[in-house]
Length: 344
Ligand code: SAM
Ligand code: SF4
Image (cartoon, rainbow, N blue to C red; front, side):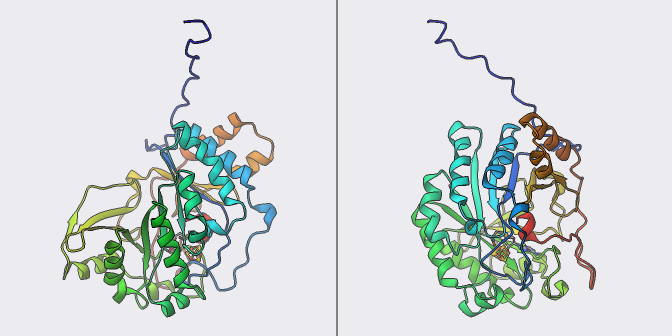
């Protein structure tokens, strides 16, 4: 063996990102835009004012910050928004981030989308190493879909799901449970998803950002939904966990997995492994709190990678123990930012 064949000395691995309560952060959600081609009634106001371009991180800045997290031990990246697939050049970001999959530093690169542009991008996503996508879909009724999304075309989303499955991606359907709108349809939606071999997850509406509606009118407890489902289905607990707020059961009759995300009726903070980066470079260590660190200011002030990582460590260290969500009639939203800004 020549000296040139000898293994290179390994740089000492950076210590993992551990918060002040001993939880290791291994999961980063990255919102790449606050814009969207839909206007879901529980998410956005009808006439949204979107951020000026200069405030939004460039694709290079997003890559730099996300990659710093990867070197600090984050193993899973989820790209979200707004609608991530409306961001111009977003596939270039996927392409760049996919280097971490190839190097083995990252276990998973994934995406949450409304599905409207998935038909266009599914094959490229699969080629770049994306294995799973979450598609948000609250109803299978075209008219209700148009109403809930204020103008969306259900056929495009279904075509997107078809394309994703055709490209070999595994798809999870996320549905927000809404009392008057889709409560009665949820069993059909779940059965439809399971019939296509898709996982389904129900989400409780969360008080994020001002919208035109009174949220107490839309709020539907998943406890009530679950009891209703149990009147005709057998739901078997599973120990499947993702470190997030979802709890999973198996529906024996359909053979599919069903998740419940219940931030309001169930406290999930003790096992939380995730933080969120907004498209403006604000790091939120908790979805339900306004605490934030401005990483855009850090990088635009010319910080080198070591300073950026220090800023990330400080932010994670301050991750709060838990959140303060509650839905009280006529109360202001617990958190002033919309889900589309933070990234769902
Ligand atoms: N546009 C993409 C989509 O719809 O999948 C990604 C971003 S969207 C903000 C992410 C998820 O957040 C969606 O599943 C959406 O239904 C959910 N969401 C938005 N606002 C919410 C709210 N106030 N409460 C609960 N879930 C919400
Ligand atoms: Fe857009 Fe997703 Fe919000 Fe609907 S939930 S308005 S698709 S960002």
